[in-house]
Image 1: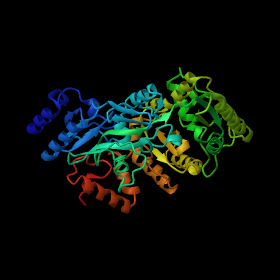
Image 2 (image 1 turned 135 degrees about the vertical axis):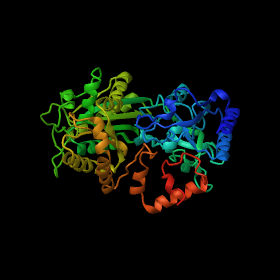
Image 3 (image 1 turned 180 degrees about the vertical axis):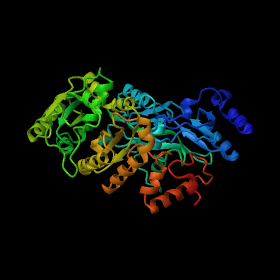
Image 4 (image 1 turned 60 degrees about the vertical axis):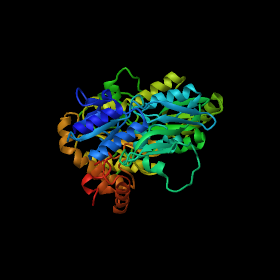
Amino acid sequence: MTDLLDRLRAIVGAPNVLTEGDLTAYEQDWRKRDRGKALAVVRPGSARQVADVVKACAAAGTSLVPQGGNTGLAVGSTPDASGKQVVLSLQRMNAVREIDGANMTVTVEAGCVLQSLQEAAEKAGYLFPLSLAAEGSCTIGGNLATNAGGTQVVRYGNTRDLCLGLEVVTPQGEIWEGTTGLRKDNTGYDLRDLMIGSEGTLGIITAATMKLYPMPAAQLTAWAAVPSLNHAVTLLGLAHQYLGAGLTGFEVMGQFALSLVVKHFPQLRVPFAGDASARASAPGRPEPDAAPSGGSEPDTVGSVGATPWCVLLENSDSESEDHARTRFEALLEKAFEDGCVTDAVVAENLAQAHQLWHIRESIPLAQAEEGLNIKHDISIAVSRIPAFVSSTDALLRSEIPGVRLVNFGHLGDGNLHYNVQAPADGDAKAFLRDEEARVNGLVYDAVEQFGGSFSAEHGIGALKVDKLEKHKSPVALGMMRAIKRGLDPQNILNPGRVLRAETFSS
């Protein structure tokens, strides 16, 4: 391996080939569930250097793990434990190459942090709408590689929908230049869409041309209490009816999820929280979002002192604040009249809106403070989510008495983070060790029964490879393997991610 390391140093410079010191930031995944060992961390500064690194590794038979901000949640961007893989970090390639106002596009290198891209677009007078909790650390290349979702998918779509072109280094070390910014290009297979969501297994994204939008003239945010998930779905329908394309965010949060925020971040003022902090630590007590086995969700707020569900919705208007407020107030008036909202607060300014969003984005952090947990990133048709939650909640509580369910997510596009916390008086590490496989099986089987997907926006990585083998059809798996073989016959790029390594040659 000495010859390969010398070659890599010659390509990117010795300071950009890391083999010693603390490499935790590159070798450990974001959730600290997995820690690998890299032969080296290589940090190229251009697409040409990426291509030369790929050629050198291919010639040596050494596999590469492309990495952006390393904020993924499916263990897809860290090396295995062999000490033989090269981590290819794209963080040095972070430039905003061009903002084309007439074409409403921005061309940016893969290592550009999402927040930096948002700020560059805003400085030029435009909106780049992709928004994630990890936007201060994640990179646009990683967002594209995993087809990240976020909080504004209901209006703008996933990262795939925001991308017009890519620059990609192939597994053979060639550069495909596709950052044309064209909105119409019907010339054969869509290689852009093939690369997006492939998690660095088919090519290495080095740059992208992304869509920009006009900055909204007004933005209104409301936090609403709803008696049940069925009422939340009704409210979503009303929001589409009254706000149209102005509906840019629609998040749902179960009361237990919010109770964890109250417990661990008491400085945050959670609307309608009631005695949530007491419930967060009450062992074995059913949460207010629970439904009796075989029954429906409660139609009214129970005696627990807080509503079972809350919704955070956002309206962005291109005309004026008066126009936006008129439509927003009409929506809320209708929602109160129909009984699908029992209480609501509307942010009076941008700072208050940010505070409401900060509460929503603090749920994963609060859950981590509560202890190790079993995370699920699922999608189901919006109309079927209430029935799924009701039946699956009852199933899990029956199978594991005292289990705590942390339900929240992007109801506007049918994506729930349906997470499972150990009983309050239990050992979180032991719960994860002993129950994760059973809980995953129960949840994913239920998702399949409801016609959903077990991975909505986090990807497959190494964490869910076996789930893909179980829940994806044999025909689809066969097509995926054929694509991988055709583009990467040496299995150089991110082996064992998305597709099982041992089945690659079968």
